Image (cartoon, rainbow, N blue to C red; front, side, top):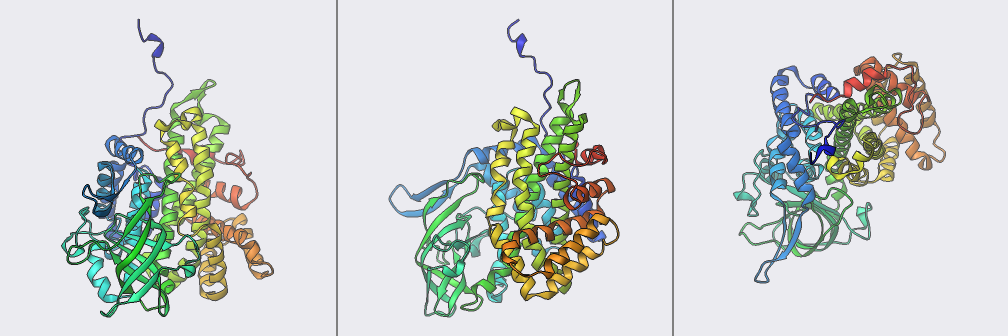
Length: 544
């Protein structure tokens, strides 16, 4: 009779063997809405294949292995030669290879590329978010390189390739390449104009020698890097190849890897430049202008990444509560738990819907859409990334003690959840950027008001929120001190207008009541009990 006391009952099955994409009704609806009908068949097939891969037990195990075996810095070889390489677990390379193959760096050269990539990014984040960093950096480098057409012609085909080539060798010999970035220095942080790395012009036009340091270098194992340095005419953007044309290593001295709270599968390093060869990107002294589209792309990826983490947390919570019984019934059927799950689901759907709308604006490329992106991207980056951490923590609580155990996967999501709020400009930076756009680009506010105005009259709470926002915008006294409040309201009104237009009525009703109508509390699970919360939860349930 040994082991008779260990019969397992009342435990949910693993959430695996399912299609992460198709099971996400908010995401699939957004893709159907924003993608050209002629592309839908192909896109559905690609995304469903990626979704099945993401939901498979094997790929989920790769994600766990990559997280449990973080990268190691190898500064020298056995003979004492400086190599400055980063060694990764094989699972990392498998994940990164699948991400590249799924088009996560190819948006700029594919029809409907940004919507397709956004959906894939959101899906692939749910496996292991760390491998999305080099994919994001590589994707975002393309618009910056286009400031220098000769460089763009040389590098863009490598960066947008759907072939993962992990070998460190001259880029001309590679079928695909990845990029990292080095912008931040310890004395400046977000104030990149305080950078001290120096760029000395060389004899060949457009080439320089860099001397200095970077406090944060993203994806330091990459083939090339975009960095900022002080040239004779001021702060300038440069391309630093990892390996030179003759096969020699460019001086790129990795001093250490950061020991981070989360995102542990991904390497972030400190690097020294000492006579490092670089090519100028854009005009001297126009470094910030050169990287502005790159920054917008990485900020949108922060929104997508947070939306992906939210979705996986909600999926795990709803799955657990659908199978777990307590006090005489399923947890998902208990009114209070249903309220919590519905509130989480509404937040997740609002994040996904907003992120895909912004991706669609990137595909459109028209003047109106570009103007909308200038104000909506920092507002979304501010709000969605800030909502991620409390949502993931609440979702972990839905699993009770099980959610505090590493094997559940929730602790990894909890550690990851604050990341996107910090990267690519923390909250204050985003709020101040919103103010800068409001002051300098009136077309951006006009585009925003036109966007939310299309939903006017559909919900009285949204109408009042738009009116209150206009009142807030009319009062410029002390506006910097109110920048966070204003940015939050911009994001909420935009989310509300999208849900009112495109989400099921029960989702839009819950959002407007809890976020715009003042009929919700500070914690999740405080929606009015009279709403159709059961339908909201059912919409969020992953089919496994």
